[in-house]
Image 1: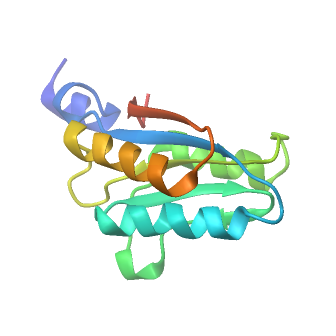
Image 2: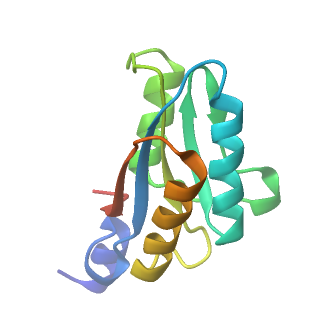
Length: 132
């Protein structure tokens, strides 16, 4: 496959990896959980894009024009239009808008920070392809 096509399809060296996250919450603790998650993302200079219980977290305008990975865009769109009925949880992805990839060491640190901050059982996938 030619380099131009690999870049367009986000294959090979152009594959972008992120972290998927699913955290059970309820109406009383969703704001606290979202604050903790976004603070951890800010600490490692990555973004969290996700939603839960009618609340959405999307990149702000300060990042300018960002190319949102297809899996993130699909998740947000599906939930916003009510196609997916999720249980009481926050679901989303950590993405790196600058380097386009989250390194393994950063993913491990984010996982450790989440364990310390959330104090609930959650599901995390530290290296997930964001386009395919």
